[in-house]
Length: 237
Image (cartoon, rainbow, N blue to C red; front, side, top):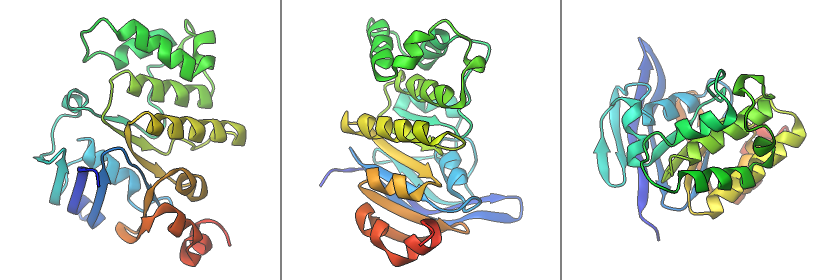
């Protein structure tokens, strides 16, 4: 069995007096695609933000590659191989696609950046067609592709994806999940937060179900997909 890359033990995150994450345990092993599903407001994004250094946690521990982490400046984490694609994409709207990709590689100083940009264009052909276009003028789906490509330019060991399918047309949703699966097969470890439980569980190895700041179910993704409680709560059955 592969080693644990990310481990949350009793993680708690609060907004003032409001407990958003209530002592959760979660593991992601090297090479896994793990999904965290749940309704809007369950605490999924808060969990990712805590891991990525965007929010302090008020209890518990976060371990990354066997080392305890402390809340820190998020800019330090890509250099350690931990990269997040935030909800809402967060592209640099006034920069071109190509400039956004270069920004993704800001921590690097090697000769392979240009080669990796070409790899991104193979993975996302639509971006190559619009390489000089300002990111803010792209469609939502194109911006999501750019946000993912920019994150990959940092050569992540662990990729945190927050709601990559949100607000996208069905055909683009399928494309995004296809790409996420492809990234995972290339050896990138992924923690995927999604409201689209059906598609997320179809591509993941394992899953966690989050409700009101707590993990209520966890296990093999296919078993969760078949679980009557999951199907009733998230798949409308």
